[in-house]
Length: 231
Image 1 (cartoon, rainbow, N blue to C red):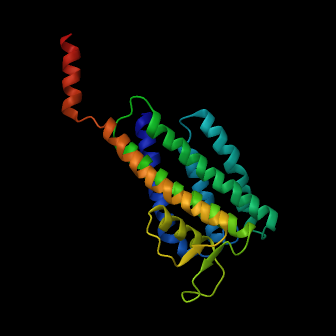
Image 2: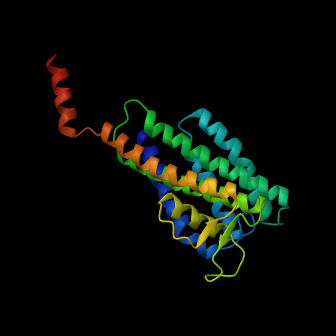
């Protein structure tokens, strides 16, 4: 059954994304420089593309964005990519995460006949986590493009920023916690951080409104079905 297959795919993806949040600090390093992160990202790319198979156009675009990212990941296992390839990899990966989140969000907000099922809840959670990955990768891209765009409190650690720092900053911003230990200092970095905070609030608001609007208790559905039978 297609709906059951989709539910399983979204559940597996949700578990994987949660696993990324839990285990990524253990891997350390920059994206495309750490073998652990390369393998983790590569597995995520394949899994995300698999969840896009319901719609051919989304699958085609997902493969088109994912294959170059996968190629750069595999290349980075043997040699460190140059600055241009590194920037290109970050840009493609951020675009891939953003596109996937947009596809899932489109399905949640605009699909006709959508009902609140487990697959809907899994997909909604995946969108939220993908948004965090999208911005985290975008922040890493900004720091690579313009070093010094972000500042880490030297009292906490005197070291170079890596991908785990930007992922942490992304989810702290998305949830509007704002601890202040890692702050954007460049104008573009501050604009992106502000935009992510706004999107985080708007997404939760829009999602709750959408889920409430499509929630149909079983007794209401049964009553409607009985009414149609009477006619």
